[in-house]
Amino acid sequence: MTAVTTVTLLHRICGVYARMGIAVPVLGLATALAMGVLGDGWLITSIALTAAAAGILIAFVLPAQEEIIGELDESRPVDRQSTVRLAMFTGVFNLLWATVTVLMIVRPGSTTGA
Image (cartoon, rainbow, N blue to C red; front, top):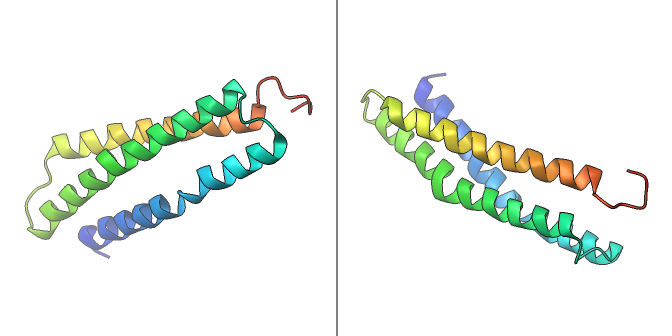
């Protein structure tokens, strides 16, 4: 497998992940409605962080991947700044998702003991 093939495959996986990720807030809102916690601060924070993560993925990560794929397709050396920028945005995206995951597990103020 060549570098171009690998990077293209990973970009395709990220695109599918982004499209499937739309289900997360939809199912999350339905669950929150069923639990009666729509106004809780931890949920509102999670929704905001999820929206920020989606924005970073769509506005920065996916376009940066496409830029790198374009450079590889043209057999040009990949600009180091492009890869550093992609790594930075990917790290921020992952940090936001990790924070949302923790909020969903801990649920501050939960009466279920979790």
